[in-house]
Length: 223
Image (cartoon, rainbow, N blue to C red; front, side, top):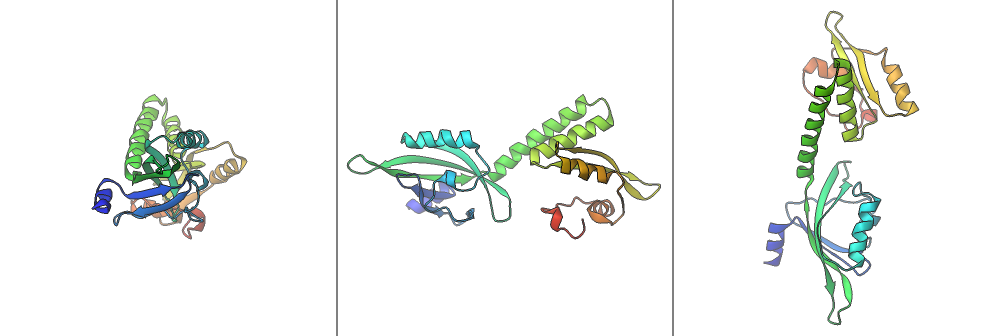
């Protein structure tokens, strides 16, 4: 009955010891665990590779644990085996033995990746709308939108190729990049590039009329 109730209210149950090291994590049948590189048993959460929170966020969380206080909906994120960022929300309470000695924490957690993606998409839509509304030209609006999208995704650069229907090619039009010499060189070399229908990733999308997502362009033979 306890396991059934836990699965109804959470995706997983967890316990840590007095040094905040993970002792066990039990996942519900419908939730896939995030297999951290090197494992997580025997490690404190901040010792396991994560993308969120930042150092200050972890420090605040550690202070709460060291004070043996209960906590609710602490959010963290990790990359899974495919490199996808997955977000978790955990809640926990301290445990004490019969003598009142602190022996660790127990708690539950939920995966909130879908919710975080929806929130990020809504924020991005608002930012893009603002960029277009404030732009004084098509060029400045395009650059502002590329900058907003790249910063939201952690991408170092973005390029836009415009269709030259008469010549039947895509030509470089605009770009945005982080202040990095390698990025600047990449963009500079892009100025002379053209794509015909079906050529490269851009030409493939132009030909099909469908969006295309590639996780690692450096390993993509069509790039």
